[in-house]
Image 1 (cartoon, chains in turn orange, purple):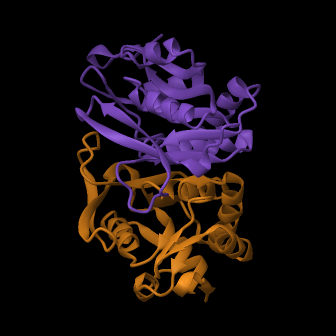
Image 2 (spheres, helix red, strand yellow):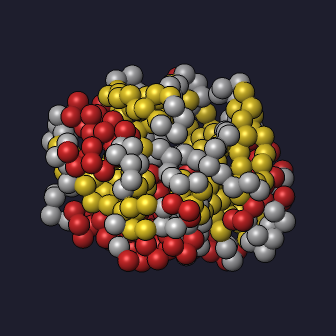
Length: 189
Length: 189
C-alpha cells in the first residue's frame, strides 16, 4: 500500500536495527482518517471471504480493527491479555511468547463471542515474530471457527512471523513489508 | 441516550452491587455499528467546542474514541499505562489510583502529541471513581492545552467520579448514568 509506505518513510522512527515506532499515526496518536484508508484496503483484500467477525488483541490492534470492521459491517472481538478480574468464566486461552519482554503472557477470549460458524479475520498493527497471531489462530481453532485471513499493517519481513503464519496456511496480507531497516534506512520488500 | 440504556438493560450483567459488565457490545466484543450511534451522540453534544483532539486511555477507551473521532475529523491520542519500553523520551505523566486493584498506576502521553493550542475532548467508556479522567485532565493542563469536555458512555452515579469531575469545572456528558444497581436491578438517574 503506497500511501502507507510513504507515511512510514515520512514519520516512522527507526531505533536500532529492528524497532520501528509509528506513534505519530498508528500506535499512540491515531490518524483516524488514514486508518479509514487502511480499513478500505483490508476490505478490498478480504471482501470475498464472507467475514463474520474481526479478532484482534489489546491494545494497539483495537483502533485498526474497529475502523476496518465498519467496512465489513461485523463486530470486533479483542483478546484480553493477562489475568483480567472482570472477564467471563468460560474463556479460550492461548500462551504467547513475547521476544521484546522475554516472557510468556496469556491471551483470552470469552467463549460467548466466538462461534463455531464464525469466519474470522485477524487484524493487527505489527507482525514481527508472529506469536500473537498464532495465539489468536489457536483460539479460533479452539472455538471451532474458521480463520479466513490475517490482515497486518506493517510486517517486519526480517523476523520470522510472516514465514510462520504463511506456513500455517493462513491468507496473510501485510500492507507494508519491511525487508530491512539497518542504519535507520527502511527498505520495503 | 435511550438506545444505550435499553442495550445496558438487555445485555449488561450486574455482578454484586457495583460491577457492570457490558462485554457483549462495548468492552470485549465491540458492536461497531452501535458505537457509531454513540459517536454521533458525542458529536451532537460537543460539536460547538471546536475540538482539535480526542484523548482517551488504553485499552477499552480506544474503540469509542476512534469511532467518535470520525465525526469530529480530529486525531485520537491514547494515554499509555505503566512503563512502556518503546515510548517517547519526553512525556507528560500522571498517577492514577485504581480502586479496583487498590494500586496506583502511571499514565503517560508523549509531549509531541498534545500542543498548547489543543482543545481536547476526553472520551472514555466508564466513569466510576473518576481518577483516570482526572489524570487525563492533569496531563492536558501540563501541556497547556484546553480540556473542553468529557464524554463518558456509562457513569456509575453511585460512585464519586461524576461529582469530582463536575466540581473541577469540566463539561461532563455521560450518555447513561446509573443511580443504583442493587440486587441486579439497574436504575438510571
